[in-house]
Image (tube, rainbow, N blue to C red; front, side, top):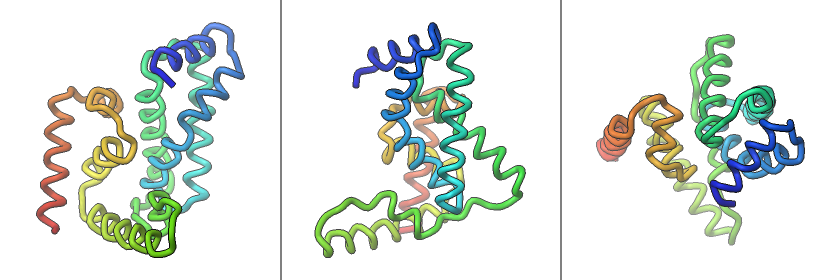
Length: 176
């Protein structure tokens, strides 16, 4: 779906609290937001709960305020809810094996095994990174967000995001 169509659906939500438009936006973004959240919390149940909260808060906000970049807005809401979650629970954000399944793709048994092994290695490498480095790598390469979108989510300028991305890649190279 094009950015223009997404903006139109978001406008319909804002203008007339259109539930069908919001439902379509939810369908388009829920998997990406869920995956992003799953990389940040320990259990799948927490990820589901936080993802639901993201869309609940998005509905509340979007029916009263216009949103220009929905993707960046949803990621920003997700980051805030995750921060609240950890403030309340005072836990760290461990990377677990069960999140490796998020990146696995269906296929042959051998292919699935190779993907699982690669995902484990990647999760091990990412566990050694700073949280901000993990976050920027997931947004850029897993969720295929543009530098501008990431900048909007992180409240940084594009150059700062490029530097952060470069440092994250360098940190991974140092571990290998």
